[in-house]
Length: 452
Image 1 (cartoon, one colour):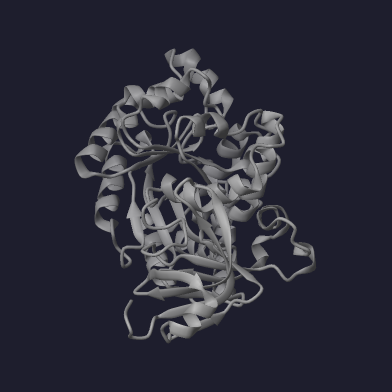
Image 2 (tube, helix red, strand yellow):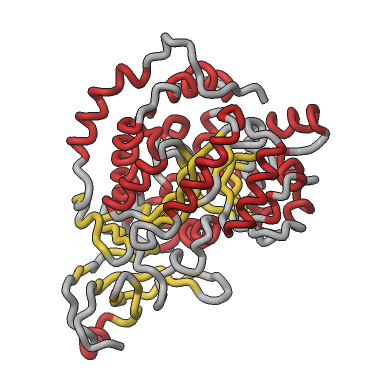
């Protein structure tokens, strides 16, 4: 251990730790030492106080729990600008009558302001990394670099854009891979099998393997899409991906509530690293009959990460809520109160989610050598006392507003609920000035047609 001062010392907290069997435990009265953006050590506070390093910055975290930062495995961050605009609609009308007409108005400035607001919301809710799938992603990358959060970014494309859509997605991924001091990773981002042709999906698979890039897309989002795909092609959306070669790539599938039993052996045979992101609030809102089959996927060793989708469908970017809802909906769907437990939910939230976005080796747990993406959660409020089972308190009683401090790569982005890298009032003022032009649908255009 170095004798020069550490960058950050957090003392007095209870730390969520994972063992090699992927069980969780809580280490009380601990100290976390951070140096050069990484966790150097996690030990007893008394022992660190006696022998340990001085630090340039010290946080006294008594009464707080240190968790690995949450990961939002699938969102469309700039869509916070459309929060509450398309309500109480079936999926098809939601896309065709509101969202895709409005998105044809999007400018880079709208995307920038939306991304700033989204990053502020996520940092305040303890999200330290998000996987984004949207347009004008150069702009999102700039916001990520500036505000200090971590992100896995992909420039979305439809086949209706012609070959340049796919080329732009590749150019973006290559240009931004490893930027923002390594906090940005990238992916190729075809929209979905129902908006991207088989030829484009196959070309994307080839490009992914050639350039060592992962792929992030929507597939088998709901049961209707699976039924329509079977009727049109005789294949499920997952089988369409397999035929295109995408299951040989590192693939992140958004939603997957339409994954059916015949898809499971296909996914099990996949030669690439497949993961699924679940965003349960939106499924409830659209009244989809199914949810992501987490139990079946986990039995195959497929990581399922937590997500919010965009705030236009979910109304928030609160992964904390996704964690609680995932646990509850899985119990209800499986008819088994023993699945998914609070402890399992706390395992999905950081670790499974980190794996889903390809960062399982660097984030997702508080352990020596990991990047210092840490959140401190205050459990002194009346709604979190008394604590009989700390895991249950965190998942089912605590709220994202109980996150006091958010740290990414050892840098404090929020301290005691105060955002240090973003000016929310200025963003909101500017965004609200732009809303009339953004939400105008009188032009009759839309960027795409939803007809699955």
